Image (cartoon, rainbow, N blue to C red; front, top):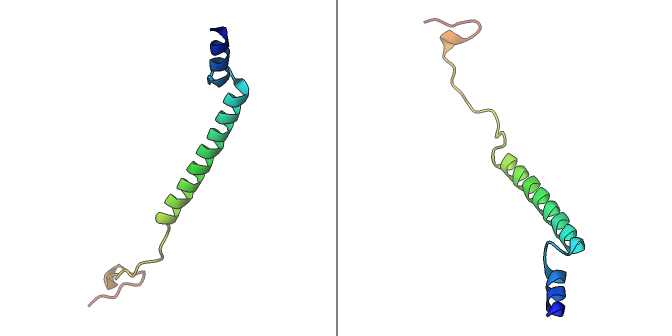
Length: 67
């Protein structure tokens, strides 16, 4: 009976700190990488696509042109 408890403790997340810390480190690296790539993708999707052609009325120019 005690042998079964020992083998379960070796596999348990809370008892084996080497495996736990390694798992948490790789999870942290994965999350940071995913957030960085996701942020870069969102910046790419919402990038500035250039100056649009806007028709400006003549009477609102710096030197207005009236009819």
